[in-house]
Amino acid sequence: MNGLAGANLLAVLQARQAFAPVAQPGYRTHLYVPFEELVSGRHESLLRESFENTQRLALIGPIGSGKSSLIEYVTSTGADVFAPIWISVGHESDEILRDPPEFARHLIREVVRWARDSQAMADEQRRVLLAETTPTLPTVTHAQRQDFSLKLALGWLNPGFGHEVEETVADPAVERNRGEFVASLDRLVELIREDLGRVPIVIIDDSDRWLRLDGEVRDSLLDGFFVDTCRMLAERNWAVAMAIHPDYCATRGYRQGAGNGYFTIQHGMPQLETPAALRQLFAVRIQSVAEAENEYRALEEGVDPIPSITVEVEDVFEDGFDALLHEYYEGSGQNLRAVLTVAQQALLETIGLGEELVSLASLRDAALGLAF
Image (spheres, rainbow, N blue to C red):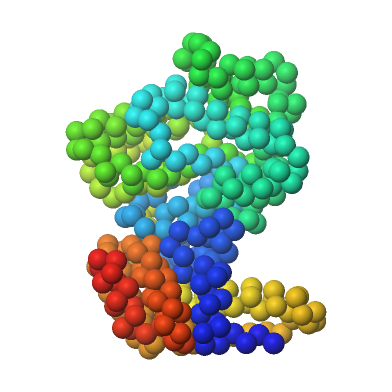
């Protein structure tokens, strides 16, 4: 029944995005391989414990090392406990990032946006919109995210505060005392805790984009964000997770913020020190996709019980692929996203040539074409 071998297997891996460097909604957590299964030490469990205890965590790692995926995996698997609020700071203006009251106002607008969307649409429309507008959250958490949005609808808030949030705080054209934004945010956080029984987590993502800024401009932004805005975040009753590039750790703003205790935990992203770890990562992704496809085909064909299936990395890659990809991993500064990009491109080229195994030559060609 399964027929998952050779060219057919490669086509399934491509269709199900087994090596996608930036996975689509519904795939990222499904294909995530916990670092605790690949290397020693505590990583996923440390983050989970930190969030449960309302800690403020700086997750430090280079571009493509898996910071966002690690945070997403932990918050998704704890969807009944956590209320994650994702903020992509790479798309925010410098003024908002350096101004604590404006950043508080922005946070409230994000929550209100969820409430508006959930209140204005039918259930099916909401599910579709959530799937389209939450790329950092996988399919398995859509139901929890929808419940979170529904409970934040203004009927859930007390009438006075609901009006304050909806008509005033969320409307940039309405003038209020700037200090009131932070006070309103505190009250909204407590409502989330008390009514939903969840730990709010503010997730600061995409800060790697700041690397593109001119030196003086970037330093000024980091000073304002890590000193002033991070102080505001540290004084709220929620957990915080910040994805931080190592270059920022040497800046004056980060050192001052860390020295003031705005981060209760600083955790470095784990490195895959051997080819065996990369081999395990690909093995788990390949097997996961094969099982999903096998189950789908069994259901389509009415086969019950669903037969087991085992696919090995040797069924996909030529021997020695792990050592070669590990060279690219180290050469790119531990950039897992870059390694997956090479594997995906080589997979595409192999399928295009009608071959049944991703060769070392195809991996080298892909790496050369991607300027590795």
